[in-house]
Image 1 (spheres, rainbow, N blue to C red):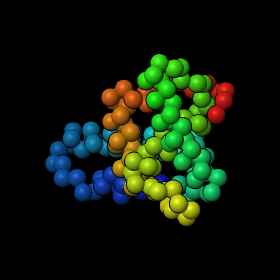
Image 2 (cartoon, one colour):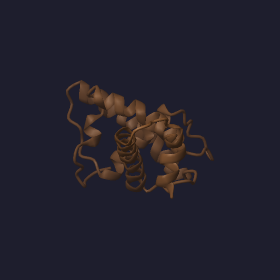
Image 3 (tube, rainbow, N blue to C red):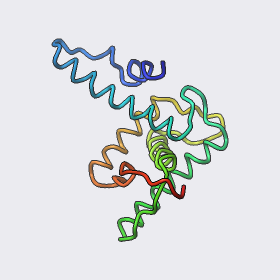
Amino acid sequence: EEFFRTTKDGMKLEQSRLDDAASTARLLFFITLKAMFLDSLRADAGLAAGAPPTDEQRRALLDGGRRAKQIERDRQAGRRVPPLTSRARALMLLGLAARHGGWAGRRGDSLGNYVLLLGLRIVLHDISEGRYLWLLEGSEDVGS
């Protein structure tokens, strides 16, 4: 259900004005990839869709975003990226996306798809520019 809410509301699928099947199919393909990526990140991070994060999850997301920025600065300075679990990577990606999407991280603040999709666009752009690419590389099940 969250997947369909993401594609319909968060990505404004019903507002598209495409008039041929091929264009609509391409749009659906990319919307599906984006929604599945977001749902996969939520699952890896242990976040329930549609509910505000718990205090522990809120702190983990805020810490994840900060840690990702620090690791990226270290990486650009020539230091090695430490081994990370898939959960740590997911929390870092979601933490970055949440902050870029305008999430302040206050207690009780919802972390919905709209905010994450806004921020995900910025994070994916950063990745396309070569920043944070290490977050998408294969994870090692050590450290966090």
